[in-house]
Image (cartoon, rainbow, N blue to C red; front, side):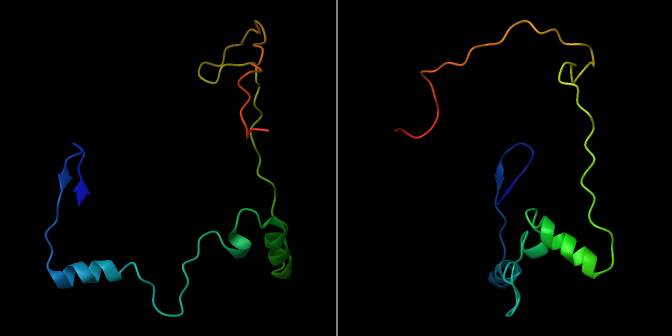
Length: 99
């Protein structure tokens, strides 16, 4: 089943062996493991990545350089924003679990 740009559903007719071949492409061989963000490549493993880099003789990972953001300028046109007033928080619609 495929969807085109017109959002119409299109069904594909395949022979049984072609269908099974396509289905089996999603199964990993025995002994392989599907890995997603695991080990030292995970985003939370900064210390582990630094240790690996040190063991390989490389310099530690530099923190990402983020551009300075001025909160009082418009993101689209760059003109200055004018502070008018603070909008008070509604206390009767607090989100969270019940007490």
